[in-house]
Figure (tube, rainbow, N blue to C red):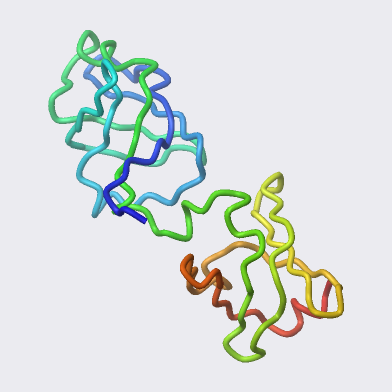
Length: 172
């Protein structure tokens, strides 16, 4: 995976006040760490233009409030209104950018219990994305796709290293 590849995160949805602040509607659920993100990319005339972040904060689960260095008034902010916003993948944890069907068929290997099975389905229609794992007895259980359980995704070997409590495996 190229760590500098741009990843679309949302759209500049509206202006906020008259001093150049904007609201970005987030399409993909990604955790943002603005202590390491210094810029966002905005698609303008088929080019991705970097905008240096002066101030940014998550105001709702799917909404960011952002002030860019070079945008200081309403007229300048209107120029990027309704434009797509991207972030470099280097700022995003790899576990957050996995596509829904990309992991189907991957082996799920627990640190303590070994191979648990193979991913058969991913449900992203719930608040917490769920991974369904089919074991060798053809029984299925599900586990939340969360950093507490998913420790490493290896695309080369098509494996996912996990630590899942036995109670959660047997619950299903």
